[in-house]
Length: 411
Ligand SMILES: *Cc1c(COP(=O)(O)O)cnc(C)c1O
Image (cartoon, rainbow, N blue to C red):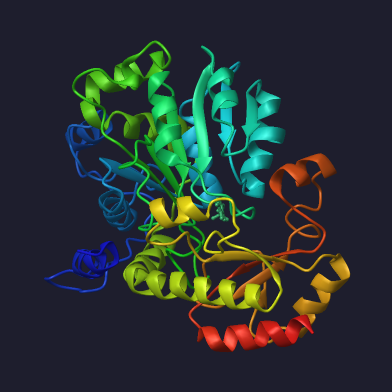
């Protein structure tokens, strides 16, 4: 069955309850009473499966986590307060001082700054590569490399990675592969392609309506046989593997990040995210189709559009082969100068000017003057940020109305 069709059934059936309140209940409590000292002891040692304290997990959030894990065919998930919280949780649970990250693609501004400016202050080095630099990526791996980090679609450079090939490099050297799949939930399944961990900003297309900030990290199961996480690269994981077996990455992430750093999701945001998730499989195919329609029409009109559905795009073949469910809601247009880009943004009546993406509404933003304003020229060039670049996230509006509005805005 078509993946979107399959999840139309799965999401609504698993989010609504068959008994009692149909809509998920919001358990708005920071703490939970244990009733007896014996139960308290059991909860803390893990033998009793009841909520401990909302920083470590909440029943509403747990529902979101179980459906996100199912969506990605993972063993489990941890929801967080934001997408950056998800990335921080995933990477900080695996890194120590002196370690190295190999970062490939995009890259989302916050993630770039986390690696380049913040983690560098704690003795962690990141090497940045384009998606095509396979040899250089392989050469950069050494004993200190703990993570290969990849974005499923370059935001905003729109370059597409060969996830399978990068996963096979990660496997060859027993290094963890983390994929930021924010832009392509459902469309791309990183764990099935060989990744170990997926991170999401659920703020974007998963919620889809700008109502809640959130993130989620999905983990694969540890194998009963040989596994990269059983090697000397990750000595700190061994005690978790001994106690939790195939789910070991989850208690490690909860202890090293949720408990100690506190980027925990709250029940209200998890509830709003569940409401968004319920219709994801219905919204996404419409938007993916509209993105193609808009990109091709604007290109025909002579506007410099960047999207891999366009034949001249360097990753057009990869788009056709590996991204049959699309590559998300984004396209970019290059208006050649800041002045012309501002003119477009003043004239468009449909696009909402904001830093968000993946919304029900069409959104647009000039890149160089906003998200990338404090990045130096060399970094902007690496990330594909030109003076006239506008990132557009297509929404649920009628695509013909979007096209007509954009064409009038470029005049
Ligand atoms: C938005 C975004 C993030 C960060 O998510 P927040 O929820 O805003 O913290 C991370 N990665 C990508 C690709 C994003 O688009």
